[in-house]
Length: 468
Ligand code: BES
Ligand code: ZN
Ligand code: ZN
Image: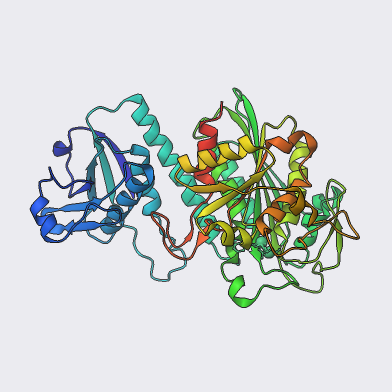
């Protein structure tokens, strides 16, 4: 799907189909027809009138989400037709919502269908009488953002046989080449040499070598320095604490945090952000085998802390522990450090499958992350740390345990585990985003498809845009 911005009067633009997004039928040319067929000005309602070449979609609120859902419904309808071109008038609609709703709504993952749907060359023209610099900027930025989200979706949706740590590293190299970023890939020798025994142990039973990916964007005019760390479990079988069959399905999505970091890094140069941005991904596969790490093992992380393993399925926090240490050892004077992870089923239970759980030590930063996430069209809420939950991950034999001794608050105790690997000077600069819910949903929602949604990408790019 291609989106164009056209400086012209709506009526004068040539197109096979017209799209109208309406919240009121009063002044509508086709009011009678629409009323006769029972069309309502509600979210998710659609009327396709092929004889006159028009699609009507309803909306209730003048906000990003309603508009993005409305246009995505129209575009999905367009995709089922033979029409090659459609047009819509910008009027007072949110341009960002129109562009992102179109490109995110048009996304399909067909790589593994033997009968490939020929992707028709269809296009949407957004008509506006006068294109100002601001309109042009929003248009271009929204296209870059949508592309980054769809790239993330592609990586996450790719099956584990085709996307393993080395493949993620290759993807990172390609992104670096395309955007002129620095790219360093470390293998297991490096992990061993640098005391990253937590991350190393998780990947030990896999036939695939673990990779630590480090991308860096360093513009000359950088005013801030941000580090993004992503959980890149290309598959999470649970390890020896094996997942039950039903829970293992979809665990190709355990690389969503790392994939979001790659997607974000693919956009930062194109958005010309005046920020130094590092993207670090721990790409690892959690498998079983004679060499697997075990419950009862004690692992030493990069910062010297010892971890008693009581469940090998709580592996993401082990990978992140070492990656967070690596980030803080390698990068000086960090302004913000965010991690992205499909870390806990508990987060999904707690806040539902559409919402990111945001944790950390600084109330203002957490609120800021949530506010930017909402502004970007994603859902997020904060989850609170407390001193009593902090005690539940104490170990009798090591410094800390990789699971809590309580059944409750699993998303928060996982966040508190990570806090053990945040250095004193960075405590208030860190936010942990548990994206286990929205990263991968097995039914379409709004303009998001079945499967990967690209959670965290728009949220972070919005945070960057508002950072000064
Ligand atoms: N990757 C999972 C978490 C997950 C669950 C992500 C569902 C997406 C959907 C993680 O590694 C895991 O298995 N966590 C365990 C932790 C437990 C053993 C303390 C969980 O949530 O059950
Ligand atoms: Zn797990
Ligand atoms: Zn996992």
